[in-house]
Image 1: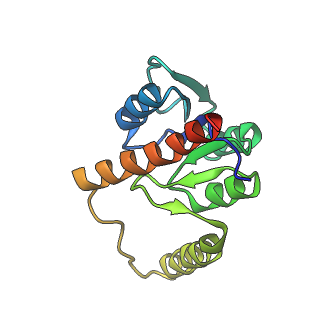
Image 2: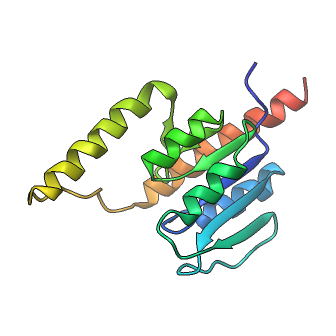
Length: 156
């Protein structure tokens, strides 16, 4: 049986969908935990708790890895952190609304490694396309679906 999802844990430093997360968790009766470094101070909101960690490059990821549970939804754009989240049993969602599954992560990590290797060799690689309103809608819809699935399981 799929674990019930009741908390959204967010890699908050580069997260472009913070307002969508706050609205969605309020509407679904869930909570969110936004984790960011001192370089990216965030303001807490209703249903959203903010944790600020050291400015180290991996501090937010390490904090998140240590608090994730199988009942969480992890929101991140970092495939390494996504792999850790999957290993902890969390559902993983990108900022663009793509759910990452165990069957996806190996290829995504391989692609990330190949791109990094090319950049180290002096090649230029394309970044992601510009973030759009459609990306925001897709993210909010997928997050709502994951959280509502939790509520439906509670009502059984």
